[in-house]
Length: 544
Ligand code: F6P
Image (cartoon, rainbow, N blue to C red; front, top):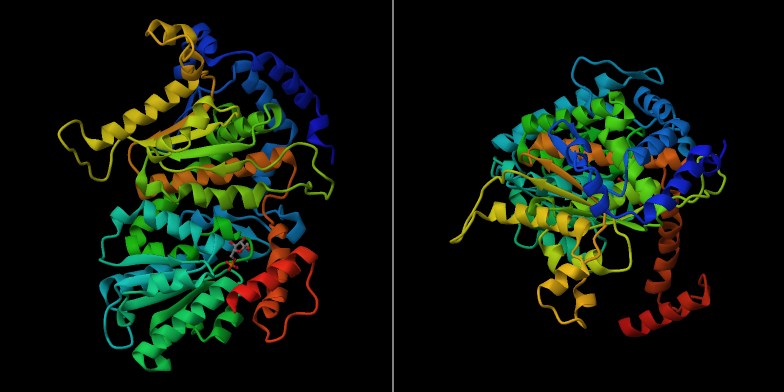
């Protein structure tokens, strides 16, 4: 496999960047005001404005040529058809099959994948409805009022983010809580005040071998049994989501109450399947299916739209443009929606566990920079925290702004509605970041000369703006699918395997090995390195 950085398209982009580096967005807009209308794409209910990027028509042509050189079209087809593109684990990558519409067939490795997906979704919907209707009763005959999802990584971030995003649609009087950390504060804080008779635990773990999840699940089981006074209560209060029926049974959960998925769904790509069970209980099967239809719309757009008008392709290529040609290290994701407060954290796993790689799929070291660092907070909170650096810092931080035209519910004090205040802030920020304010403009306001440099707003800071009418289940599905495919585009250009995560394994093994050193009566003889040995000694002293 040739390295993409050796391709003529890469060299062409490097040369073009030299020309673009000195060009300001002010000039690009002055020369071509029509870019505001032209540099937009609509897919499903999402409208993307990418005119405030440091690109021209030529840049886009060069980026699309790079995508073609990297074989993006063939890779997309390979993913959707179930080829084993997760090379290091020899697995298909088929999260797109989780949202296949009923009636559409897909057979992979001799297995009717579409039928499997719908069988699980149907079982989930039946179970969710029974819980929502109060037909599924706890051990003492009470209906369920709280669902506690215990999982970590993809078995937590997806459902937790989506529940928060769609909580206005939770219409059955059932709320969800999420426990992930092995820090005891997480589970004890979550269980505090809960009525065990009305609580259902969903133990979510693809492998059912994750230390944090199993430990929290055991603590929850003990809490329940102590309070309800009978081991038999477990079967009415614990269900599992996993690919590993054997381990679920070993834990003591009846596999009749297990919802499965498959090794071709990566953990961070899984909440639109069984890992979304807690969400489905909260919002109902119908809303969940609306969300899947949203995912599907973007899948279809990604699969069929020409690259130059393809939202995930354009956004992925812009990520490559800034990462590899402008040396940007991070990308901020700034949702102007409190409901999307967990979206940046969710994206951190999706993007960084996928593309934080330094070898290519064939094992050769990468030459290009990979893996943007994703971070962010909802607007307007971020404006009063880190936007100073975005506006005037020395670093280039391309940012994705996400906003909605309609709130679920508006409020007002004595002025305009709060939602319009929120939206005005989004538009103001992207404009200020792009166009800034010149020294002349600042001086003309009567600013003393010595203060002018401090007030100077350089602008030329690139942003994408994604607008949708309202944060509905379908729109949430579209947003998540958009970022899943952005990850895919970037990973394809970089030639890496975006679907394994070997880098998380060593730390897990070492934590297991180190635990006895913290808990044994005698100080440990052997530890992995002198610094760790000293820290363990200090920890033991402090712990007494
Ligand atoms: O440690 C990383 C990871 O393997 C993630 O990829 C995954 O989402 C998470 O742990 C949880 O894994 P599981 O669902 O198997 O408990």
